[in-house]
Image (tube, rainbow, N blue to C red; front, side, top):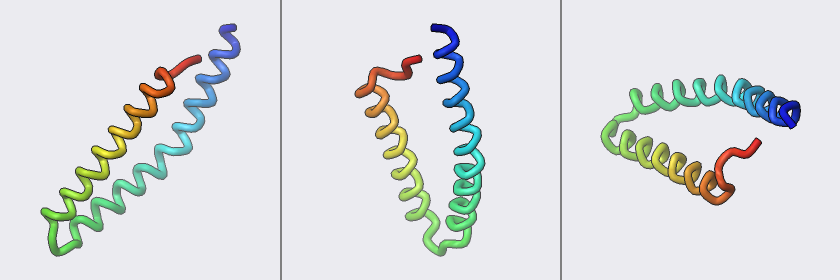
Length: 70
């Protein structure tokens, strides 16, 4: 039983290790685009809405599936 949980945790960590660099690059590219854009306040609002939507979607999915199960 513990071996299965350890394998699933390893898969989750491996997936996170693959996603984190791409998310960091996207965050840097997005921040650079916001700096260059002429209407910064409006773009910051869009970024805030996108981040809020992502968090809300994540929480909804987590509630729907009952959180993380190993």
